[in-house]
Structure formats: C-alpha cells, structure tokens
Image 1: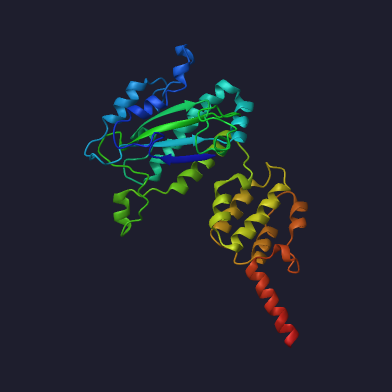
Image 2: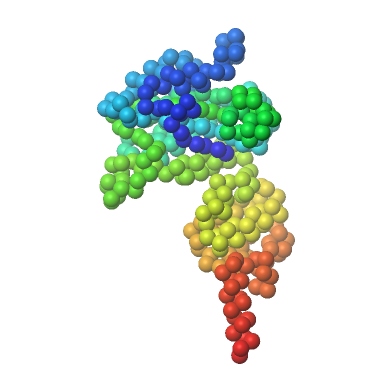
Length: 324
C-alpha cells in the first residue's frame, strides 16, 4: 500500500486548484459516454462535478496568504497484489466502489491524525477524491530514460488508484490543517494548538485499514513497518525482524497473525535487547504450528542468527577463554 502526500502533481498548490482538477480529468476526456466517466466523490456525495471541486477548494481559503499552500494531494495506491485481491474478491466494477469506500476511511484517519479538537472524521474536512484506472510513464521512469517507453505511455498491469484533493482549511473554513506540520511544539499544549501530523502513522493506518476492511493477509515483508525498521532500525531489530519474517513464511498465512503483530510491535519498542531474548519470547507464544519455530530456534553457536555486536562479543569471550 502506497500512500503519499504531495503539493500537487502539477507542482503548485499556492493558487487555484483548477489546473490540478483539470489534470485529474484526463481519463474522462477520452470517454464520450458520460455514464462511463469516473465522478468525483467524498464522504457525502458520489457524483460531484469538476467545477464543484474547484469552487469548493478555491473558496475554502479564509485567512490564507498569497504564498500559503491552499490544498494538498493525497495519492492512495494499492499494490498490484492488493488490487488483484480486490478484483478477485469483488469483481472489477465493485472493486472500484470498494476502493472509493476505502478512500473515505483513509480520510477519516487523515482527520484524526491532526489531533485537533473538532477534527474527527472526513466530514470535518473539505476534500474530493477521484478514482483513476491507469498510470502513465513519466520522464523519471527508467523505461523512459532507457528509451523502452515514451513519456505518457500507459503502464501495464492493474493500476487503479485514488487521488484526493484536500483543502488546507477544515470544512468550516476556520481551522488550518497542514500535513507538513510535523513539529512536536515546545510543550504538549503548544503541539495541540499546532496540530502536529505524523506521516508515518498515517501511512501505517492506511495499510492497517486495508487489511482489516478487506480481510487481506499481508506478508510481513510487504508492510511499511518492515521497510521502515529494515531502513532505520538498529542491527538487533533488523536481525530479529528478519527471523520473524522467516517464521511467518513457514506458517499458513491465516494462522498466528495476531502473535506476529505483537512480536513486531515488541521489536519496534526494542523490548528484546539481544537475539536470545527474542527467541525466548517466541518460544513462549503458541502459533499453532510449532514445527516452524523448531526450525528457527536460537542456537548460540550459529553465527547466522547473531547480530554484528553479538558476534564481536562472542569473539571477545573466546579470546578471554584462550588467555585463561
């Protein structure tokens, strides 16, 4: 699941939203039958016209200056695997509607993430979503750079995704809401006033919502938490997460997911100081399939299960033993 917040696909969100609305109508421009065109939607209406989107966003800018950002673009893009799952489960037409429903729930999470009084659901926001069926190659894609594809060529595979334009101001046009404000503030009350936004938490909530709402069984390695820990975690956390992934791979996907999630959370909290602590914890949890765990049991003589720091400590201890 890829969820990203940007200024605009056309690079400017300090003026009118008209150019962006027009850009996001690009697929409809090639569909003559109005009944087959994708309509704009939000949590209240599923058939909003383009000019209504522009007027709604452009008129919701009270007390914003000339150089202030007026709106943001949220890209909600399920992976090929997630989209295939939706289509196999519901069929292509209903899958589109389900993806729109999901987008509404994502905007609920967007609202809650600000931690501002009165901003609790998507109904408290001024926003409009647009489902797109295709993606197109851009000049930054390696296929275009290598000459295999041309800029503007349609990408292969299932490419359904939702683009959301959300106003900088809430639906009452009174409260400023910026996802770019990640400041924790000078103190708790100051942070509440600013309305700090946790981008990582927002992206993780979208992934969690998809899994819960559609009953999707996500492989640990496909999660944002896995990617973030493997990129920014300590060597101990990375080694533990790698072992946890191997454990999950040896299980029927529908079994042991709650325990996997619990262990993942514990790894992120750094509850296990060493690999031995991690394996001891696994041994105390029932996954329903003990054979998988038995193959991964911690062996202090097995260098492949040790972190670099543990290997160094082991070598130091061996050196001390030889001196004795």
